[in-house]
Image (cartoon, rainbow, N blue to C red):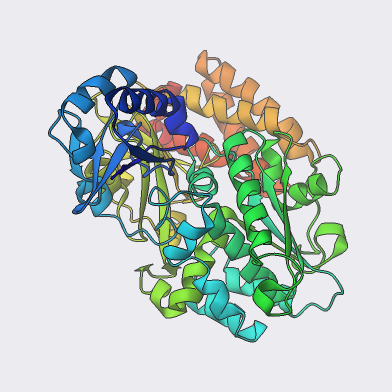
Length: 517
């Protein structure tokens, strides 16, 4: 009887040697005459333990990690295929504290199943949400999503149900569903993990969205740097068509929904929904003026739902278990769960899915284990390269949209990048301006010119030139960017710059008392 071994096919695990380990395990098993069934699963998100190998046992999966090719012989000598004792034996995967404390809803199958096996997906509660949706009037589907409290997980946090309801009630002979999978924020990887580790949940979510608003065509706008996700999505889409979960007559319901993947061209600004649509239409990715909103006049001038991967991947569980079930997680107006991504100078980088309300300090120390360097954590950037820098005094802020907004910070896509006390925050502020200058689409003057002037100004400040003049000038420039930019790229660049200046004035050659004045 063969033993089932799970080896991640996640691109981060592959970069850490998962493919080489899989090959070595196959070769060693053949040499010893041991029959194995190797399943390439997604990552559990415990990236400091990748490649994480799991062995199926009667008592659950037993994990070993991080496994390198040089460990394979000793693993077989220790009878790891029967969960034998070994220094890399981590015990039952579900009991690892980092994993056990999580509340995985959107990520319930990621790391558990073969990502492109429709049979695995169906055996693990897949397509139950769509089955329920096919029995409901469109307005009831939208109501379930509205009742769940789901808000856009891409960063804007706009209520998903309101967006869907607008598209539902806008008459048109053609409507579209767009998945924004152009995950470009630094330190973020939750979208990629879903697409590589459970692509069917995104397909199901988009299909439900299409049925809910009367859209018959969907597009996944995928970041070009995600080749493994591209393969997984196309494989899953082909299987969904073959099994009648996509196409002209979904599961005999008479409902139609078609879906395809389109690759972006590497522009960060195409993560903004209107420039994304310009790109999808074959044009240069420039931000559009609003109004009209995409929900009324979006792709090719038609009503369009634009949601990110995590938003759409959260929809199947809402339609399966009900809006009230999902709403029971979280706090305040932030309902459900948020996949948080720990990166940077952190001991235990990875993905943590929990209900809103966990504090940043709990995330950094109870899950992250503190800094990788062992030095004090000085600053944390939350919400991507345009997110504010939080000092230690704000680490007790709960992970909640409104709590973050009250601190003039953003929760965004849930990316958390950690810096220890060796970081130079003036240099980080300068990098933020440089990032905006490089990635600006150039359509509006505050972003196009302001970011370049901001970079030059920060260069002068770092060199100590005329601080009495240049610091107020920097603040004035940030005010122009904040209030005059056409989209969030220019409009949010002041967040990291001003937070660095306000919380870490000593790095700019100022005293805290003088800066406060």
